[in-house]
Image (cartoon, rainbow, N blue to C red; front, side):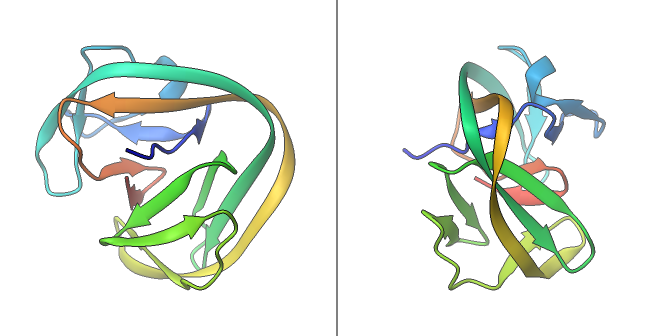
Amino acid sequence: MNKILFSEDTLITIADSTRKQIADIHIGDRIISADGSVYIVTKLAMAATNRICIITTESGKKLKFAESSTIQSNNISVYSEMNLNIKEILTNSGTEKITNIIEDEYDGRVFAMYLNKDAYVIANDFVVK
């Protein structure tokens, strides 16, 4: 299973509908999925990277992740190895146009979060897995 390696400042929506930086998520935390279901964090993985990708939408939402990640949204692969063919992504506000996908230098950590069931999570208001 592919996992998204989110930048350490990515905000994940947790079960009480508040948001928490992924760097502050712990095993056992409860995460709310896009359909309102609640899942348990069973594993976290951390890595360092010097390259990051950033998806930006027309409303200015940004999602930062390691370039080796695969981003799925709305049952399609939105990003995989700089695949720029998909022009839309699902957010909490609905489907939004992607206005930019760039690679940039990054001096920080990235995190993968594993749940007790494969599910779409809400990360920086993006609905992804």
